[in-house]
Image (cartoon, rainbow, N blue to C red):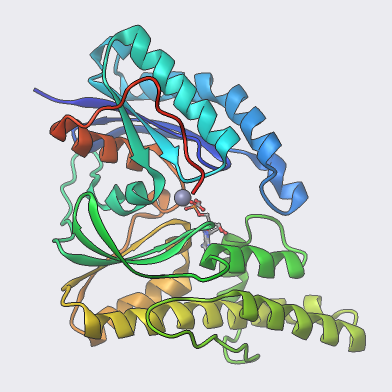
Length: 336
Ligand code: KG4
Ligand code: ZN
């Protein structure tokens, strides 16, 4: 008999609901909050309010698109952290009340594990190859940069992480310096395609081990742009593609250098990318090239499963459902 899971994601600025049948996506509805663009970043108070407005229509649409009645659901899985507390509370409270009303189990999901396990989702009619444990996973998003050795679905070992900004934050902050809208990653990616990545050099931090640091890079980018604007007020407009390509090159180089190092320390055959920044075309190309050179298999998430979505939450819930890992109504969200 099939298992139907409703997944709910509300950790940051996307309200999302998805229905899966076992590991197959039947619907994955995402309401992205546009309101933050004008502030250059996510405003937590506005995010919680928008989640509150979006949650019921988004869940309703997800069920309708899936063609699944709420009475057919086996369980409800929701992101319980890490993320913005006010945002998480909306998904947490909604999931609790719906599970209570339907009398079905409630499953809590860790947002970062969900990004990784998105690789175990299939679309209807497809059964794509899955990474094999243990695998090396680079999880890169707006809030996190993590190198993980994934031994099993819920056994993830941290090999390294950022000591300051996340990779996505570096993209978003660089975009802000250039006067580009939030989220900056996709915009930088777009301009970078027409630019010369070697035109400007931005120093990549040398941090010991498998850790990352992006705050120095951001500062050197800020000073570089500011100094050039003093000489030429049109510096950004005249050099936008090259600035984007050069900054992207520096971020991607930093990410690939550590994965290269991790290959020597970890015997994983499969390399997996996860999180919003894994949508970056420069990163996808560089990691594919690296995997080829080191004779590893690469797993890139489909673009619609890179950024925050509830299907990844639902599949995490599916694996926990199989283990009977449920939570009670006293469960509270956590921010970090
Ligand atoms: O995983 P995600 O949706 O949310 C978090 O869990 O943080 O990631 C969002 C981040 C943002 O920083 C955004 O700029 C970045 O992913 N991002 C990208 C691209 N698409 C999204 N960064 C670089 N290139 C992209 N194409
Ligand atoms: Zn995320």
